[in-house]
Image (cartoon, rainbow, N blue to C red):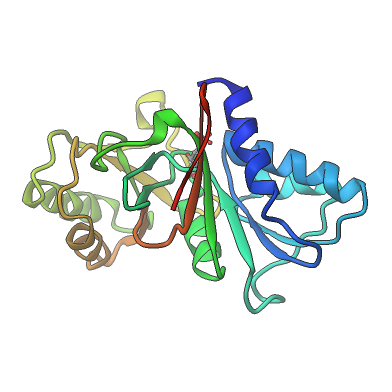
Length: 229
Ligand code: 5RP
């Protein structure tokens, strides 16, 4: 989908930002548009304080002179604006295609509201077409991988499990120093149960199912920006 659509969704979310807000800044190409537009507003005098969800977003924010902080200094955030890999009709999400799901979930959970920005290609009837990223500790990878594979089988996954980056010869490492296993479900019929089952595995740090966390989505299509809430 075009960068213009992502930018339109980002611009709509920017209209939610008020002076003095404490903001969570998402990660990915759509969130990047939001941070860019926010930078223009900051340059024009808007005062906000922001917590980035990745080193990449932190670096972009610094380049734009957007004031940044962290969740040790700020109790709560007013709003987080982030992208998504999939959005279902109840605004449940799959996130983590960019590998930032852990910080994204921590920041969203510390926010009074989470708004997602996306183009229409991200909307699905049922989550699971996009591979579900599962962030895992490096220690005991083999055991963790087998335990996740068993969960996939129990939940009727149509595909397997891939260590991100392995096929290219260099496993992807998250900002937290962990690895990501991408789980190919095809269709996730019981997301809450799947979430519980994955989090029961000791080596799983977090997964990319964001359930009941998103309050509103701005979804840009060639016909305009749709508001889902
Ligand atoms: C990163 C994410 C991103 O928000 C998600 O992958 C969407 O990215 P993009 O806007 O580039 O499609 O969850 O971990």
